[in-house]
Image 1 (tube, helix red, strand yellow):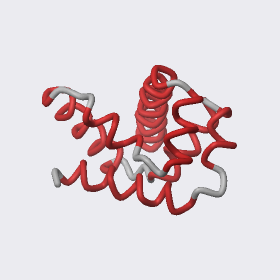
Image 2: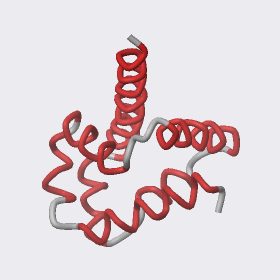
Image 3: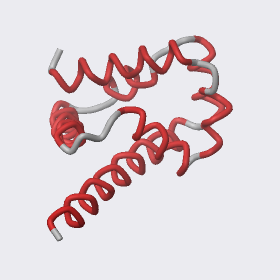
Image 4: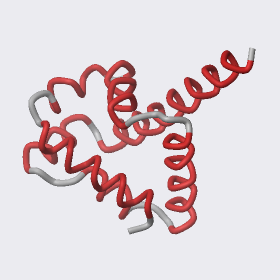
Length: 112
């Protein structure tokens, strides 16, 4: 029973995080995201610049919860693409860009 609860909580946290990113991406706009990715501009940096210190602290706690539950960045990307398939053609083949974004997220979580 404990494994079922842990698995359900893990899935809920993953869905919630992906939904939050999806909502933010929709505010930015798909065309703008495409332009930013093609120009190599960090969407993560833009998102964090736009956040208040309180919001950043909340996002850091949420990201830590993901890590503590063993949710990988790859799982988060896969869930985001499942929820927002229109992103897939934009980031497909952009492995270095995605790695760079992951490093920025990791640095943010660590408070760097």
